[in-house]
Length: 144
Image (cartoon, rainbow, N blue to C red; front, side, top):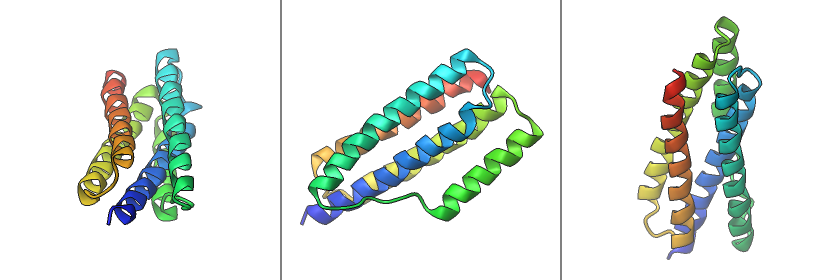
């Protein structure tokens, strides 16, 4: 049966894209470089586009999606605040976001492999989200 894997993959993508948007929102106000700010806001826009597509697909399946784990979101926010309190630099922002992108790529790749029976539209969204995270992580290295 394809549908359960499809919904599970879409839920994980939903949680991941929400986490990405929240993380970018947490750090973008601390950025001084216009180039870094543009990179982050462009990526947030890409995430929001995927989020909208996910919402449509989840609605089609009658599913509410999945919020990021409260613990993961809280720990991420706390780590961000602590690191930026010690060193509010573009390099710190880039480091935090690179770590987040790496975790996103890793977990989304694992879910893509785990839910092999998912429909192609769900797999496509997961692959595009992985690509967005991977590209952002790579682009951020110039600011480390």
